[in-house]
Length: 98
Figure 1 (cartoon, rainbow, N blue to C red):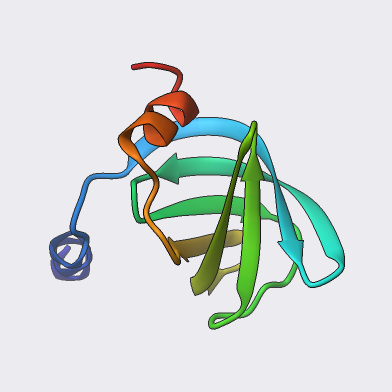
Figure 2: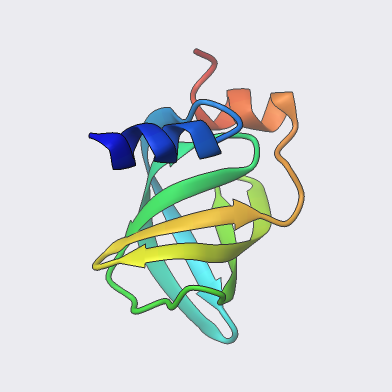
């Protein structure tokens, strides 16, 4: 439980739950994945590709593309930190206007 609290304290903003089909591009490789949660600075995706921490990828969802660095890879769940934050409009678009 302490680890969970420490992890939450390190996050600067709350992640919003979603379930959207996305594409992950790593170099010339393109993978289908699912966006699990998102914030203005990062996201968590479920992807069958073996993407290692430190790898840069491009996340494509709807009409939004964002370069991101893999900061955590645990089996099929990948934590991404965007190289530039999503705007409020982009975040609203991704979560469906909630």
